[in-house]
Length: 161
Image 1 (cartoon, rainbow, N blue to C red):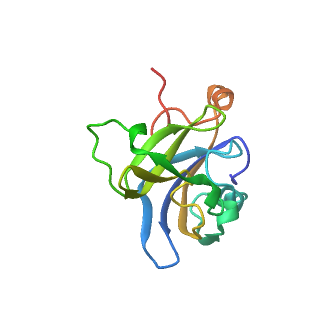
Image 2 (cartoon, rainbow, N blue to C red):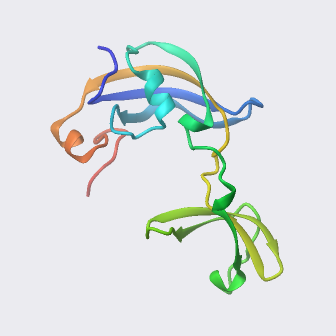
């Protein structure tokens, strides 16, 4: 079976940046996604199309096909009063915030300057070229419920309570 839309795909992968730093890794057969449902970054999903179980390959994904380019407009100064008073604030910390359309976004603290906190709403990997080493472990047809919900269920997938 080859990877195509509406298939559940199980992968092992190692993700590195251009400096060979390991950013993420799944080597226990626990990473599953529903192909064609935009569950993973577009560049990786495109690279996986047509692959078969047992295929192993390397692929480099530019920011435009991953988490986007870094957008300076997503960084802003906010007053310290926007954070809980008892919370110690340090560069590198991440918080949930409400975006302009009411959606939840993760912001990263870039620096603390007195009562001004510089936050960045870009994805932490925005602007980063991603280098994957991938092995396709398994491919199966998605269930009707998985197709309806748009994600994998069952072992190694999403569980509904």
